[in-house]
Image (cartoon, rainbow, N blue to C red):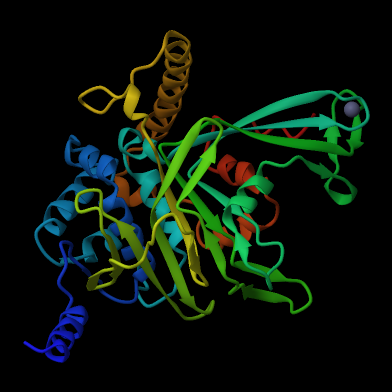
Length: 382
Ligand SMILES: [Zn+2]
């Protein structure tokens, strides 16, 4: 066969939608939810946990289990999930980040905890140096794009997130010791790194000059690995948003642990993306919105079942963290038990515009958590 004919065949095959994975059939334009569901499906630890779930009407687990079981075999309809999530207008554009959090909040703590990390914000009065801690859980770290006309470097954005921030002027904090509002320094540290670290690029922001929300289309440089303290994270999913605020489209590029290949999930279509990654070169994207990184397990410390062996110091720390997680899980459980409703009624969560809430300050993430997380102290004093 001549080279030309082979080339025609190859091009023909490339346009076919043959994949090891299956697409989603939505009742409307719910690509924001489809991308999130595919990310969750492709996160093996999450999928395994969901598949082991015990039926509980207060969580989304058994619905996700049925959905995942079908998706393993064929193209799957999402109408049941959209109904449960209370999406009545399936043609309205919504935020993928908001639905990512919504689904996680509605799944059992056991399944969702791999996405959960903890931050500690230390607030220090500039005058009397009095300081206080505020620990809070997070699902997503929002990164600000400071220079919308330059390439946004994700690792620099992450570094900036953990830089100390001075609050003054209108943002002064009340200091109990000084008994008045004072300038303060807010320091942020990650006290519990999540197994899956989700970053959000704040591409949607309010432009005070234009007096409207605008989208930032700058290029983002997305590293394949990130280092946070002692943890190494590998990029395995990227949710992209193209188009504008009123009408756009979400797709997701996701790496399969099973086939070691990247795929593009675009509603009903799933396409192999063999050439997406080349060596260790960071990805470049004008539409990257959510980035999911998986914490690398240290192979030297891993046992046969993949769990890490901890030394005695780590073990004590781990036990302490475990106790904290359990307390948090119980609070989440208690909250649910107090109600008699099923999962469909639990959806009274902070709705749309989560982007806008997240955009006010880099430390708004804690405030955002406070809305739904009783563990976090809502003390604003120092
Ligand atoms: Zn003070």
